[in-house]
Image (cartoon, rainbow, N blue to C red; front, side):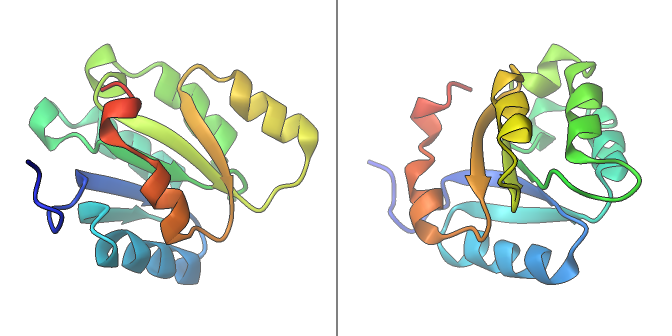
Length: 139
């Protein structure tokens, strides 16, 4: 039986250009035993580089939360680059889009992406994290 105080996931990545939102989201992840370790990126391109350099699947994040609208390298550009990563990355990391968008075209585009597990409106809540169950996202 899994200890209730043990985090659901070992490593979680949060990619958002807004430092306040990153901080708040990180606190929610850690304080609700969702993730044991949180790695934050303000630039999606840096997150892609990080993922490219992970050789050991034990070091892979299990969960990636990314905002859609960011300067220099958007969430959509991240998804295009992520799709080109090796299967060892994609089989071990699941992507969730977190955004303020209400644009139906963008939301539909997100759901068409084979690498996206889910879309969630900001702000992130404990209730949202509670719905993410390791056994249900098929690692």
